[in-house]
Image (cartoon, rainbow, N blue to C red; front, side, top):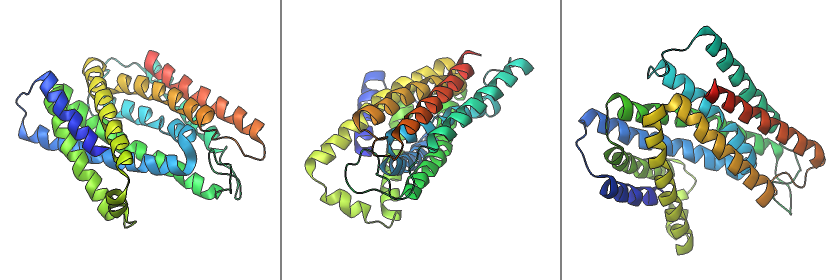
Length: 278
């Protein structure tokens, strides 16, 4: 995937044009790419253990942290009043409550894995996946704050910023694979060509989306831009996980799980919408 991101960065700088970039901003963008890779690695672990639907609900918390990062560290939304801050606090509460309800749908030991029709997977392992998703939100927030600083505070153009992020993503991916001690680099080298091609396509798609997101951040900042992005991403990913992959099937009480998941998703998205519109 990181190689696809690198290819996408070359296309972006050709399409958007190259420009000068301060060395410190280049270093910050490069480090941002490495930071994003760590968050994405944790998200992949979360999806593998807990499924897309549950993991992407938890990832919503990155919108809350990005709002805080945008306001506290980047000086966005300077006109916040006490009333708006109180509304924001309520929005955070909705996100946390919704995420908690979704985590309660994780099965007990012996229940089936997300979408599985065979033997079950330890529910404790699924809960560890959700913890990984929560930790991933911290890395995504740090990435968002760093790149927003490069774009909005330093005034660096999107094209040259992204072409600097991409080598950091490749470097981070290699380091994660080497340091994981799970033979992942060896597995990557021996993987079928079709899987490599699929991963490269994923990287190109992410690159396209990220360039658009960066343009959005230049207009709104991460405090407001990230909730819109993450809220939309949550709806699509969660519905995909539930409807396409059947990640809530095979539970002892699927009806209760669907109700909890729907309520949790609704509360989480409501919190994101409230945060964006207040």
